[in-house]
Length: 267
Image 1 (tube, rainbow, N blue to C red):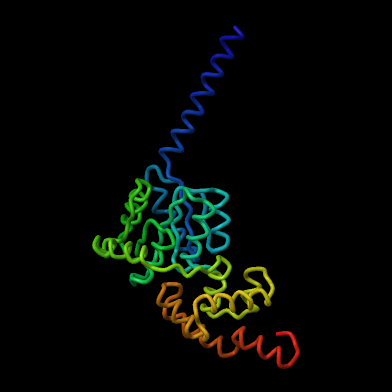
Image 2: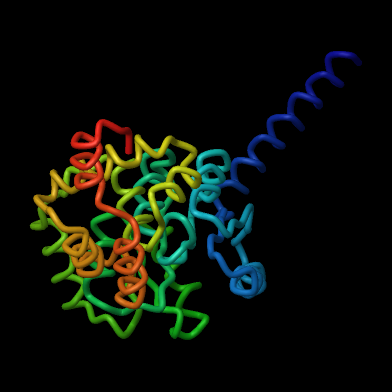
């Protein structure tokens, strides 16, 4: 009697594990990342009605998104291109290094070639325009889960081939993760002190990284960095005016360093 009972428990336990395994195979887990709550709410309402989709988390902040994906390891991350603190490109790079099995689909209002190229270079598997019909995002998720790459219907197959080729031919900027974070925040218009607070590092560290990334990119003026950021899809053109304004009120780290040497005071 005890043996029969034990056998049945074992059998039920085995079937239970098999059912859980099948559920993992059949269910696509998704995290939503957009800095607008109303957008995340709309996306959740749309995707939760689809069979086989399960929303396991959402975030409105770039740094928080990276931690959330690292902990939950979803199948899909639906990611806004222009998030607060870090943008979708840098989030994509860091997410894929921490959760390789997660596929990233960029959700963006920008159809510019530079954004699509940089998204593909960063490792995104899909690029969906916010102006697209709602069913396009659903189709994009299913295509990416099936192992395909997806671009919105307004971006042709020929364009996709061109973007992929350009992304392969493009030279790596050789910047570290921290340097890319600081570059993005700087060109968005944040001062060194603000960047230090956001990233929880010292202002001197920020200045050191800024000088290093300028050197690696072969740039001497901050305006050159803003141009680089806009042409590589790091920030939209509309943000560049704000960045240049803040550069006028905060000196370049290189000039700040030279000034400190002449006066004998720390920057």
